Amino acid sequence: MTTTATASPIQVPDFQLTPQLVEFRDFVRDYAQKHLGKAAHYDAETKFPRDAVQAAAKLGLLRTTVATEHGGSAMGNLASCVMLEEINAVCVSTGVTISVHNSLVNSLLGKWCTEAQKRRWFPKLVTGEWLGAYCLSEAFSGSDAAALRCEAKKEGDHYVMNGAKLWITTGSEAKLFVVFARTGADRVKGISAFVVERDWPGVSVGKKERKLGLRGSPTTEIVCENVKVPADCLIDKEGNGFTIALDTLDGGRLGIASQSLGIARAAVDLIKVHLAAQVDGKGRPTASQPDQWLLADLAADLEAYRFLTWRAAILRDQGVRCSMEAAMAKSCTSRLANRAARAAVSILGQSGVDGSTAAERVLRDARITEIYEGATDIQRLVIARGLLSPA
Ligand SMILES: Cc1cc2nc3c(=O)[nH]c(=O)nc-3n(C[C@H](O)[C@H](O)[C@H](O)COP(=O)(O)OP(=O)(O)OC[C@H]3O[C@@H](n4cnc5c(N)ncnc54)[C@H](O)[C@@H]3O)c2cc1C
Image (cartoon, rainbow, N blue to C red; front, side, top):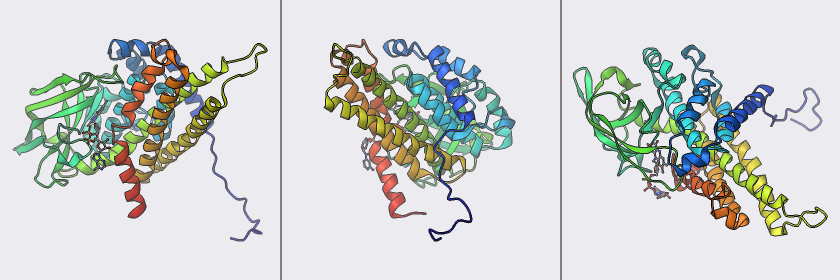
């Protein structure tokens, strides 16, 4: 192309949400204002936000990643990101429940299950009658997910599952678990994915974790003792579990990136309100320049990382693999959430730590975004791998 070419106008990317997505964002913002006012209470009482999650289900927020023929709204990953930022800006416990249900469970079933399996489980999942949980981690298998030991031994028309999954979000509330278990000796190809229902004999909820943040979200052990898993609950085919787990985490990381954006936004808003109240006798701003610089940098990063997240979501909606882009989004946004939350606590001083504002809760909640669905250092390895050995 030459600079004198005039045949067609140069296309520029449109950085605006469509009118439909703006309307959807405002709809979710309205839901957050009306139903998430008890975020501090859920945190203080370590209480699951059941009412808020059920209200979300009634408004159709638990079906954004499900196809319309299975009762979903098929809005996709970008819409889910927009939704999750709004919810997490107010209540992260509700946010992570919805993120796991939509991006780790519903989207996995939608992509990898048979029609019969979808017809069996989606009616309950899209209405919120059942919540879903994603069971990959174990006591000796976190970042190194392929080290998992939970096993599923084929016996005739079923598998016998034994093992314990740890740190499972929504563990005590979920009725459907996607469980990754060992069906063979090969470290990676020996892993398969199954649907396990809460009410089956041998399935139990073990210890509940006492956590720094996200305290309204129950994180528990899920124990399987001689659970008879029918063969038709195997997802896709034997040996494909690790591929399914990692592919699903690309979408899950967009959910956590959006959660991080929500947390960062909440922290920036706290700082804004605090600094805007610092005025002289004539109403002129008196906030110190260092505080203004900090606010400016956080606000600029928030805008930039939102686009980073949305770009990865758009790729995923287009069916393009986005492991590196999702890892970039998660590592940047989660670190921003922590920086912004730390700044809010510092700038607010006493009211940043005494619970009279949301700052200390925001700081506790922010920490987890750098750990789950792949710790920050793991995200950096995914990014480096993408750069050094592109597919
Ligand atoms: C609140 C919460 C909810 C969770 N929910 C779920 C869930 O629903 N389902 C589920 O399956 N799991 C869940 N998890 C587990 C989560 O995914 C793991 O905690 C995470 O993968 C990290 O594993 P780990 O805790 O064993 O830490 P480790 O794997 O021990 O890692 C600790 C640190 O070591 C470093 N590290 C480890 N390995 C490497 C490496 N190879 N290279 C460089 N650095 C490395 C990283 O910096 C990391 O931060 C949850 C965890 C939390 C805290």
